[in-house]
Image 1 (cartoon, one colour):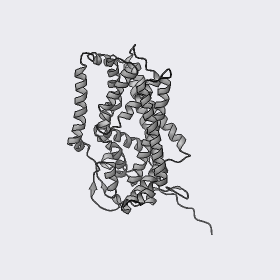
Image 2: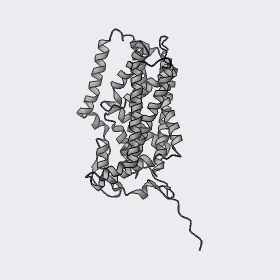
Image 3: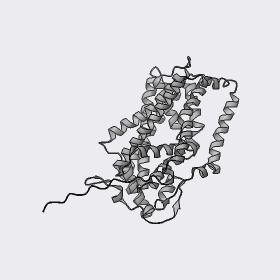
Image 4: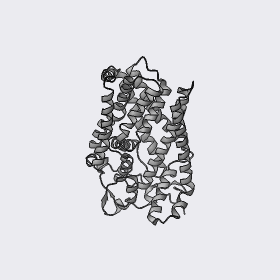
Length: 386
């Protein structure tokens, strides 16, 4: 659908971009739907500082922190040794865990770069990784997964990319992640519990299988019946146009010949998550904790899945409770050790992004729309001899 006779069409041939071609009002989105509805407006800078001072943002941070504080108070005697356990971690292994985690960002940037290229938009690895990292920073400080919306808006602010097609690439990227989390989680779980599946793990497996099936059915329906369904609804033509470009971003970004490399990249990305947690456990060196690589992958993927809960930034409170619960209930890790593992892993995977991401957000030209991403000139057609 997105391809012309010579391959994917460039963004300059697919549509006009009024946000850059003519003056219009600016708009700051609150959600994916809101952003798509206002695609024709100028994309103004989204003020993260203002978002942080909004009552719902403050509430989404205070409530989880209050629950965490209450949990720590109730278990204060058992958790009194946690700070000392964390301070005894091997610094070299902690740095190695952080390095492995940050290796995932250029991999994610390269994957998004490939997805955008298939829709006709060219971006280099540095720009794609920088925009993606800033969007992760936003997801770590603001709820409702605004970082995913912000990523598309950053690209739009700094180029003539189609906003709806860019959302399509972000959407299909999330679908790839869902498949990877479910498949790798099932494989790691089966190997980790090959001597017998606990009831709680069996339930998680069922949920994972259902998620994969629902996602597959959803993609099949969108690909084959999406436009037909929308044309039967009393919707304005503008909605259909936006949907078409969104669908082009989804399915134009993933071709059969590129699917194997995308699958490999996605698998490597999520293996860095599991390897990070495995190294964290090694760094803490608890003699009574036997998690193994497969167990670390299983726990890390559950934690990553819980960070997607939009009620708090990066699933604050939910992800930590889930990881501690799996470690203690399923793997029998004592509560102090499970809490130390969870906190140290959170410092690497979330707190470091908040710290370094704030620096990148301040120094990067992207949030101010000054990092213009130019497209290469179209190749000139050779003149035919007379």
